[in-house]
Amino acid sequence: MSGPAALRAAALRAAGGAVGVRAAAVLLGAGCVVWAAVPLPHRGLADLALAAAIGAVAAGALRLALTSVPTLEDTYLLTVPLRAWLRFLETLRLVPWEEGALLAVLWLEVLHPSRPWHTAVLGAALVAYLLSTHLAETDAAPRVLRPQARVLAAGAALLALGAGAGMLPAVAPGAGSALLRLVAAGALIAAAGLVLPHVTRTGDRS
Image 1 (cartoon, rainbow, N blue to C red):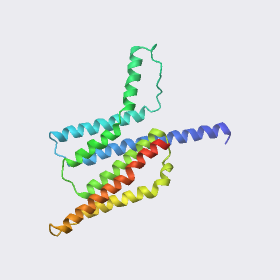
Image 2 (tube, rainbow, N blue to C red):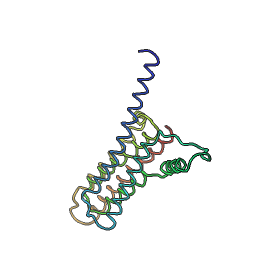
Image 3 (cartoon, rainbow, N blue to C red):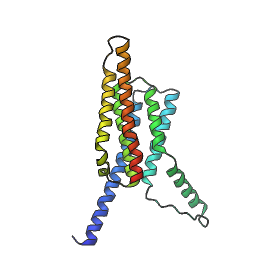
Image 4 (tube, one colour):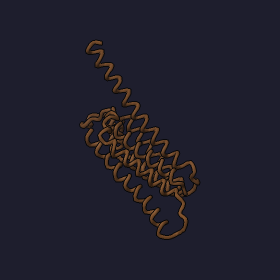
């Protein structure tokens, strides 16, 4: 394959990979909303949290779809519609939609009783959503996460440990029951502490 043809093929593969990562981020965000909302009674705060989660995920998906659209610094000579469009793009890119979606989805999860495994699956999906979003924003390949594979695996293991501890029935109230709850809470906090800081580091390095 000649040089220009090889470059075009590489560019097409890179573009296809970027589209795949963006699609994965959008699907993960939508899946998190559905997962947290399916057993939810629709009333009051639940409806508000659901609307906020859907709006944040949709806005984040739109931002990812418009990532390659350029913006201009000098807009003085542009028409009013074009200036409005550029202002819309600027606002869309400045608002932390994914973080808002994370809070709204966690709010949905809190508003109804759920089993520990349900919350653990949601936590893993939310971390994957944030990681895939940052990969899509920076056009980085998933292989950039390889150096942090052990950290991510440790976080996943602690998340599973916390869910498992939460599912074990407490024989009776007392020190053993309190210790079990403490282990579950500590594992979940440790998993978040290990995994979530990597999301910021990935976006900063890429």
